[in-house]
Image (cartoon, rainbow, N blue to C red):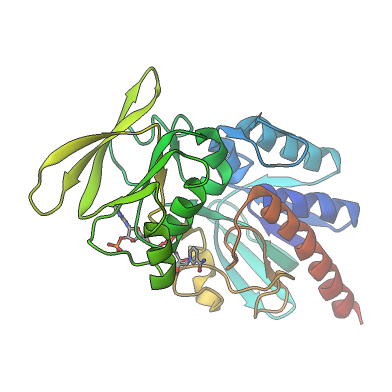
Length: 306
Ligand code: NAP
C-alpha cells in the first residue's frame, strides 16, 4: 500500500511531490494531461521569486523536472472518485486499476471560467487575462476592461486602477453583485467607470494583441466597440472537485474546506492549492500549500503507526 497519492501535478501537487520524496514517503503523483496545471497555459509569469518573466510552460517543466530529479513517481490518469474506509483509501481511476493508499492530497486546482466569445482563446496571454494580480503589471498606463460584477471583478478593478490609465468595468446587470461597500469604493475611483447592462460579444485584435472589445447592450441590443489594451475576465472560477463531492468536504462554490494546514474533515485526506477555500490563489501560495500539506501528512502517518 502507498503512503500517499497526490492528485494533480500543478504547483501545489509538484511541490508536495518534492517534499514527499525528501521525506522518503512511498508516494505517487497522478497527472491528467500535462504537468503544471494552469501555469502550463500561462504566458509570462512575473511574480514568482527568482524567475522573472519566465514562460508558464517553461516553469511547469522546471517544476516537474525538479520533482522527478528528487525521485517523485508520476502516473498518468484521471481520478473519478475516492473510496474512504478509514485508514485505507482507494483512488478510482477512469482507466486502470485503483490505487490504495494511507493518505491523499487533492491538488487538482481551479480554472477561471471563460466567456466563450470569439477572440478570447486566441488572445489569452496577449491581452486576455484571468488574473489581475498576476498580469496587471503588464498594463501600466494602458486602458483595460474588467468583465464581471462579483467581488473578484471589483478587486481586479481596484488593483488595476493603480496600474492602468483607465479601467472600464463591464457588467451584464445595472448593479454589482459584489459587497456593497467594496462596489461603492471602486466606483468612486476617478479612473474607473462602469458599462452597465452590457456583455462582451467579441475580443478584437491588431498585430496579435488585444485592441478592443465589442460590447452589446442587453436591453436595446446596440453594439459598440471599446478600444482597450487588456481584457480581464472575472466571471468566477470552477474548482476541479467533482470527484470529492461525495465526501462532503466541498462548499457551495465547489471549493474544498480545509485550513492553512490543508487538513479536510476526512482524516487522511488533504487539499492543497487553488481548489482550497482561500483568499489568495497564486503559484507561490499553491506551492506553499504543497509544503504545508506534506507536514500534515507526515503527522497523520506518524499517528497511524502508534
Ligand atoms: P461570482 O461572485 O460568481 O461573480 C461572477 C460575476 O460574473 C457575476 O457578477 C456574474 O454576473 C458574472 N458572470 C458570470 N458569467 C458571466 C458571463 N458569461 N458573462 C458576463 N458576466 C458573467 O464570482 P467571483 O467574483 O469570482 O467570486 C466568487 C466567490 O468568491 C464569491 O462568493 C465572492 O464573494 C468570493 N470572493 C470574495 C472576495 C473578498 O471577500 N474579498 C474576493 C473575491 C471573491 P451576475 O451577477 O449577473 O450573475
